[in-house]
Image (spheres, rainbow, N blue to C red):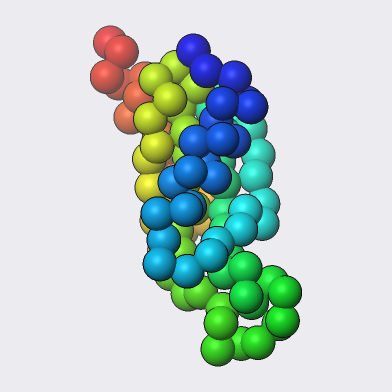
Length: 93
């Protein structure tokens, strides 16, 4: 099991793999771990629409395994979290 501090560090490391600087804009906890949303640092600092990301899917970090799972953008975040919890519970059976 990992802590929130460890998950946050992993999230920041994951974002450093990008070709452009990214910054976490929203995060939260759910029963299976933590989720993170992000945006380009340039957009956040300047508000320049041409710097805004589109299709940047949130991701979660599982508190048991520490694994990163990229979610989608077609549905609300809560729906992806519910799907993840359901799929994980089925694997544990």
